[in-house]
Length: 112
Length: 115
Image (cartoon, rainbow over all chains, first blue to last red; front, side, top):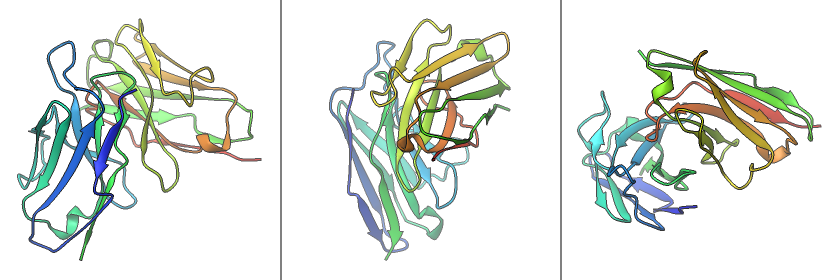
């Protein structure tokens, strides 16, 4: 199975400052259909996961434009341009290109 | 509007069985693969199993292979997870999700495995 490695494990951020989360896969994520099924999810405390980004860099409807995804091959990044209080939670990358899919271990974003 | 509603969770003893169901609406169910994802208390997300749109291929995480079975009924817009030989470590919320990109999720159903 593909291993997804996220870093850092914990990310203390000052309000209004940028944040960046890295996700590395153990093999390339280009699917046979040509798509790269790499998504990012946010899970706020006590809530179900919510998808933010799909296919590396596409923002889901209703997701603020301060969230952006990038990357290719085996290295992917989620960036928050200016962290707000509502961004506190755990962020996961997940690949669906190779089955079974696999999640990263999560990055906990907290306010300093 | 896409809707996914899980059911069938509950308290079961170790070694017991449960069958989870996920009822789908708001999209052409037979065109999409479906996935079960779980989350143990205080832990991260884990992809459990998924099934292709026509049911022809199924995949499982190693920890459940041989004990869990995913299936679907495209005439009833539903996907199922038969869980046998349950263990304490299977405890958690179970979510069904649509498509390779996990486009939409249900609210989850809680499975608790305890004596």
